[in-house]
Amino acid sequence: MGKLKKATRNIRIIILLVFLVLALIAIHPNPWAEGLAIRNVAKNSSASIAGIQSPTPKVTPMSRERMLLINNKPIHSLKDYYDFVNTLEINRTFTIKTNKNIYKLTALPEYKITYLNETENKTIIEEVYNETTNETVNVTKTIEVQKFEKELIGVADIGLALYLAPTTNIRKGLDLSGGSRVMLEPEDKISKQDLDFTIDNIKQRLNVFGLTDIIVRPASDLEGNDFIIVEIAGATKEEVKDLLAKQGKFEAKIANSTVFRGGNDVTYVCRTPECSGIDPQVGCGQITDGWSCRFRFSIALSPEAAQKQAEATKDLEIVIEEEQDYLSESLLLFLDDELVDELRIGADLKGNPVTDISISGSGVGQTQQAAMADALKNMKRLQTILITGSLPVKLEIVKTDTISPVLGEEFIKNALLIGLVAILAVAATVFIRYKKLVVSIPMIINMVSEAIIILGVAALIGWNLDLAAIAGIIIAIGTGIDHQIIITDETLIGKKAKFASWKDKLKKAFFIIFAAYFTTVVAMLPLYRVGAGLLKGFALTTILGVTIGVLITRPAFAAIIEIFTQD
Picture (spheres, one colour):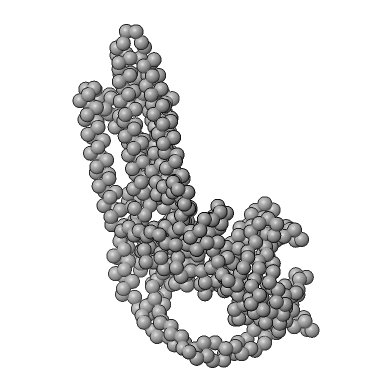
């Protein structure tokens, strides 16, 4: 009992226990979690109209909204969900209860739209500002639209992408959760700035479709070639390729007339400080709820696009708002036929075929710094939208992978089983070697503690665990076993030696351990940088694992051996 009391007061063992507790808090294990977690919500769907929102990309798995009941009936699996959805009829209302709210949904009809090679005139009512009377009046206009036919084909999808409720905060990569991975390669060598901007562009494109479980990251190989890795959990290879291939259609419209498109019509979008940033003529100012800042940046249009803009604006009225002269119509920005922003047009552009124009906007915040950050964020978003369809370089899909979630589940089960067998085998071998439970039992505890702390750090930083990352954890724990055997040998031999103290032997053991540690870290750093990003998880988890072992678990194990092997 005295040795146990001494162990609980040892600073190295206390540090290990503290990190174990923090790791368990970060992992937040809950094997009894019920329901289906919401992966994303399709826009304009029944779920979206009812108020269900897609989770943000950085939300932890255990914080995601989970579907528990449909019409007060428990939903335990995807089969339960689809069994109910398949029975829905048009306009039928039902309720979905989640762990956060109760929603009332209506099953919407789904139509097949067929556009005809005919047009018809359509009368619309539009509000126009009258400068003479200083009033807004309704003006009737006639516009030409394309005819189409609608054919009812059934009940529209509710719009929910679901998966089994997570039981921990550990994020599983595609190898374990299922999904698709696409590797893109620029056709020509591009700068880091253009590569980063291309990645932002791809994220913007994918986000338009409401996808949140996406990862878009740069990568490179040993030869210096750049790649872009796109990963989408829960999506098939065809869906990912379809998204990347289809998106990029950008249109700017004035009063239903397309004035320019992304690509050839937009010849330049300024992203340098010389012609983009906070508007120096307006700057920032206080408003009722905080601060507001204006931004501006310039773009260049082709002569043909400039002429279209002149034709579309020559008959527009001039209105005054906030002591500024604008045209009566706004510039509407569409990405893949979806409205993403609306900009006011300066009166000086009326009927003027200018190629260089300035686009402005604003950002708000509680403080001036927050408002500036929001303004620059909005500016970057607009720049990304405007350049869509005219990427700095053509991208080629060089590789696609699709992983079934069933394979991931089977791998996790097998990995846990093999891990348990390996731990017992190591413990048995150590016991046969030393014939002391005070050595084999702490070694088992140390191995399990090391794995828990590594997973805790991964959960805390939001790192996705894939097969390569798990291999890194195995390497780290395997290295730990070697280090623990060195510590045990040097401690036990040192206590029996006549000419050297066991403390000197322990110092020698840690000298060997630190030499091996620095060798491992140096070997892993190149893999973290290269390998097309596919070995990044292996390198990161290996470095994390050996660092945690050297600084936390190995010293605690040495303290346990020191205390419990004393006579």
